Length: 239
Image (cartoon, one colour):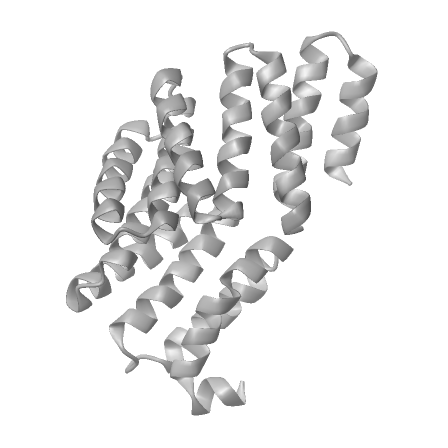
């Protein structure tokens, strides 16, 4: 608290640095508390710093499924990004807004926002942004049963993230690749992708992602009549 009062700009930088830690450990509420306090005390900080802190708040809101809060953070980010010509923050906000719209069932709005995010991310040239925009586009397409687009986008996300050594996005995209294969009833392909994603999530220490993959494998076993294995995996996912 003393640092927040005395050095608000440093606090904003720390929030940016702690984003992945809070996400991996599931400390979403704790992170939001820091974001709110740092933004309140850093009103005069450079727009780029505030935009990155708002991005952290938006990501945490995404994990909390608080899409109204996500929109508030992202709309503020877009204003600051425009003021500071911060194209990275612009792309990141579009990705979050698009993903939020997809999860709320507004596929048309999600498609518009995510297509814009791909263009801005490519303009910026940041592999992480490009891979993330492609991955969330794949998820949105999967939700809309557009499996051809979902496959094209997830393949692109995997190619970019693997070249960049981005294990986080590689794990996300590999998991999504598994669920696309499951939707196609390609159970062997789905199993292989989900098992690879599990390996990556274990290396990252990301329990929530691991649980989602186990639930996917349980669905495969159930579909194939292996009820006992499905129950066992569901129990492991909930543990």
